[in-house]
Length: 414
Image (cartoon, rainbow, N blue to C red; front, side, top):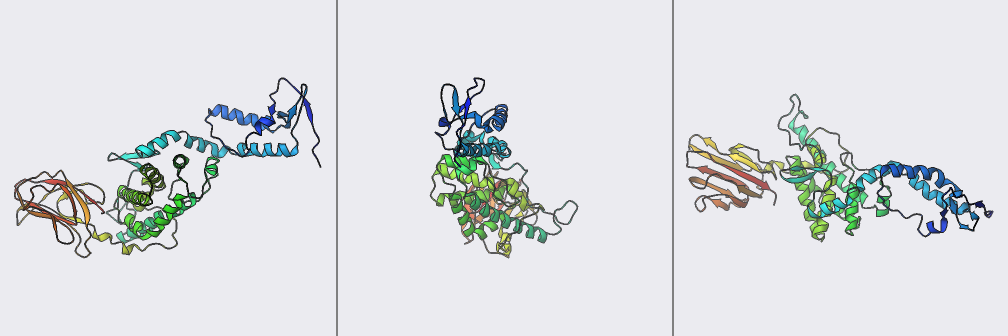
């Protein structure tokens, strides 16, 4: 049945909206507007009442009367208003995320300091929790794990869950569109240990013209390297080194995909917000973990091959973390020694070993930094000070002087 034209007499106390002006825009178009919360609430209240009145709109008008929209026209108006009026639950989160879009784009493109995070050793890390380290005692009061074997099982499960969640999360988010994102249509189930990535990070990608679909490419590449990445996390001894190892892996991956520098920084920043320090802490504490369909067996990861200190005191050697080692007095030869080496029962693995701040430049009785082929990277016969960067797996140094000495050591994967 055709609509019957309806007319109303003008009332100069009411604001009448001319429908032809409204119809110049598509009803499905979305805009982002920053307004005070009070004004936003007033606008919602007025729309809830007067916006739903057919008499608020004029299809056409004369000097004394105006024509109301018909049923079909008003259904479109009402549907559009319902989308806005029904979006209150998502509006607060979205507006909060959008407040810092400009700063986010600038910071991520420049310095990687956007988003919620913390400074550790003058480096920015996403996540707010205090970084954890691998436990060294088991079965005692306050220990999370009854045995070291139980801890190894847990960190393997956690490493698998992190990698699996990263693959699933990035793959799911790659399906988003900018329209769905800004409309609040974000309903993607991520693994329980993951944070929800901020809307602002995705808008920063969009601002650089990067399609969200590239996240599926990254997810597929991670899936191809699943075993190596699980082992990389499993062998990390601290949340900081786990984060650093993943960050380095993602950085190399995105570069290999052919992105330019500013795009690399944006993509790496987004991925690391999926796996902040809070997530890496799951490796070292007794927390619930989501199941993984086909987990990597961490018995193949060879974590026992990391160098350990034989002689010397101070910080334990941890991948990616600078350790300060002070020489130990060894009776018999009566010398001050610093020595670290790989466990005898495992294959040799070369690392990048950086030595800095060595307090002794002479008086060496012997010593060398040596790689897996037995080649000396530094030897006391030809050099006086071991400060430098080496491809090696062991270090042995002893001083003929009567006083102790120390050095800072950083071991990283090649």
